[in-house]
Length: 487
Length: 126
Image 1 (cartoon, one colour):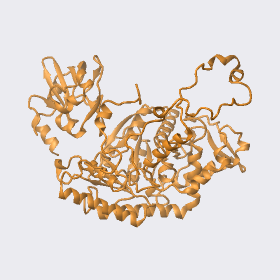
Image 2 (cartoon, chains in turn purple, yellow):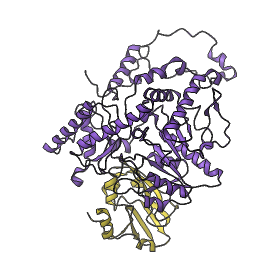
Image 3 (cartoon, chains in turn brown, red):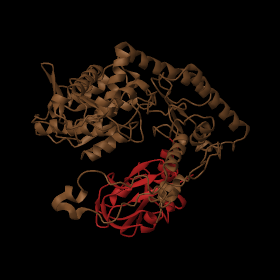
Image 4 (cartoon, helix red, strand yellow):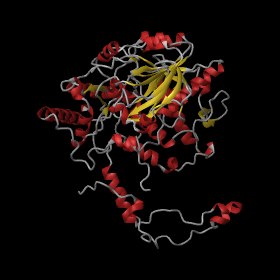
């Protein structure tokens, strides 16, 4: 196959008249001006500037782009913190069913009982998994879930006549945590990690005040370590009437094993695209349901899907609610896939998925720690963080080089340079859906790359060698972004 | 690498140097090295009141986005437009051409509580 390095876009391929004659007949029914009535002057006199291409040209264009796409269906994807697990085909079958896919979001509840039942059941499953009182399916993504939960917490304090301006986040936290605080009008204050990579309780205790609304913590944390002292952290917060917020990014390690509600969390979000096998598709659509304890429940967004005497409805009548966080009741297609996943695996299957995810990560960690330092080496959960800084400053940039070279081996790179507290970080998360053979191939690739480096310290400098694009100039792209394809 | 001895340093890797009645501040070589190629800088407006240890701006690199903390309290009297226009100045010359903010200190004594070059070098070694 010839790989073209640059692909002209559809506008550049456009040839006036190429598609002429394909669809010339005007559609039956009233003319647009007639439909618009008094607003007819809104109609444009000029046709929209769409490209003009034959059907085959369009098919080839998208097929070509699709071939260059890298996806979990094609190759291994150990992107730490992202939980790139397989998206089962049965989820797609369910979500594409006409009765679900073509349902109008404004359909009257009486005509959408099946869909509402599915949403209500998913709500109950997530409540059970979280160990918390009530779940809202509304949020559109993980970070939106964070914001929704923070707004819910702010609503709770407002009802108590408190403002609470600060939110604490560990120094290993996802960047979205402090960002969500800022968007919610609160300031984020970092809490230190201990040398073993878990949260420093002394620093936490020193920083919690009457102004603290919550601590946002990921457990297992971004180093892949379970925060053993999470209950003690919860107590410190609760003693100040502050909330423990659990970032559910790493729930894939603890399904059916530990419940956030049981270890002291007051609120959390789920990433359905991570934990519940819905696609990480092109930046969306996503879903980030939020679970909260009973005292926060009245403040959750509307609408809430409810059940009464076997009938399902959307409840907008929640006087303490923070209101609507987005249009309609949630990203329904994604909710269908997550429901399907939970029903397919069942409680025992979900637990086994987590156990296997942890086993796979530990298998890789045990082999790879022979090749590169593993700074936080106390037994990982579903992921772990290697450091490519073996010999100090001379290894500067090595994590990035290893990542680029892995692409030549037909594997996606791990997450690099995150978390920030590990120099030259390589964050690896295999997930439970990878076979032993694939894990061994990854270990072999890492070993081969480090042997190349040993034989020639410059060996990785220009990798990847077998991809359509080798190195992009990230600095130039950030300093002088070109945001249009043409002037 | 040792830090210039003609100025003081904050725990958050800013340098601060008194020039007459005004203080000039910027990021240290260590900070710049950690950030790698700097791509974007946001500085406070002239006239803004800043407080020691409080964020007053933003520095972004391809690797991270970091708050810029004011080493001292006072009023902003000037900012380095050249550095905003060409952020690579911070990478090439952090102690001179890559200066960031000029501040009229409200309490000059605050400068004395900052680290001297030797203490700052020690901080960077940790």
